[in-house]
Length: 185
Image 1 (cartoon, rainbow, N blue to C red):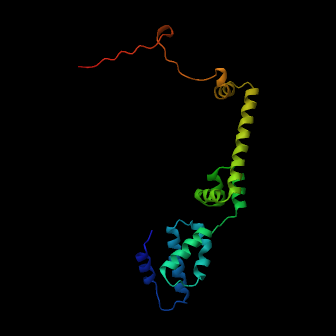
Image 2 (spheres, one colour; image 1 turned 60 degrees about the vertical axis):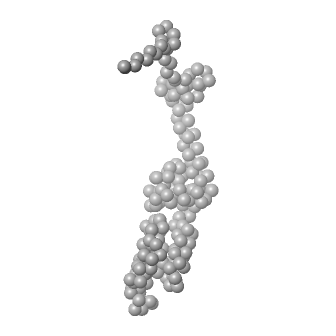
């Protein structure tokens, strides 16, 4: 990230002839976009926010500019929580496919999950629905007498009845294993 001195140098390099000139507004907007990118704002959010950056009145100091950029980044949301929920429902609660469908990063989805309880609940509900579906498929496979399904169920759900997979190491005729250590001299 740029420090205040470097940011000031960039701003000072901008043409100062006419501050109301469109060329200056575009350069200032591009500078602000590059600054926002260093704060982690997504490219799609920057493109849709260019008009806001260009139309803001000029700040008097770099400190005010930094504060304005950070507050803008913190409050800007491209998607509504309902759009995120809909994408998660289509992807059955998986973050990567939901992000691809929306055209955003996985981190954007995670930010919404952290910020909006209703989005987090929708994701958890979708994952529960997928788990229920998988259990139903497993039960159908058990009823169809699929050996793999019967074994899997017994190994994971009937351990209390002795269906556990474990390796037992014993000596001849079930006796304890004898270990003899040999040291080289």
